[in-house]
Length: 104
Image 1: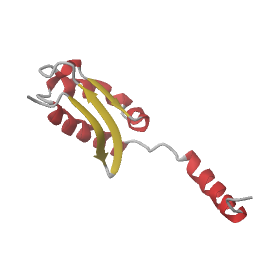
Image 2: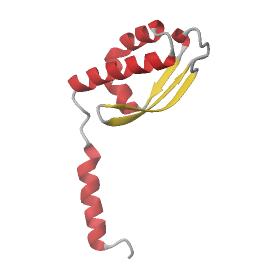
Image 3: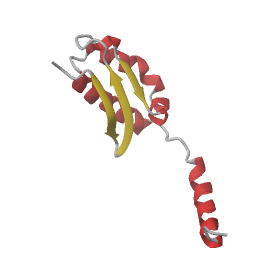
Image 4: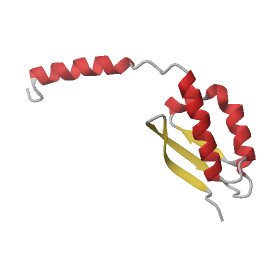
């Protein structure tokens, strides 16, 4: 009896991503539903058909998740990361708050 659901984090290139895989019928992974956080999903959009193909061919959830990590690693290595728009703004804002003080 194999795993029929996985909900947790996968480490891909040193970053943790939330992933949920539900398999309604353990003997058939082709009917599985895969969800992952939007940052990862956005960068994997051009690999959807490959991911679905691996899902259909995998013998169990563990095997698929290993394949998924390999696909994601390959994709993330070759794609440009999304710019961190808020990071500079957030740092500046926090610095100003610290200078002014948290209490008025």
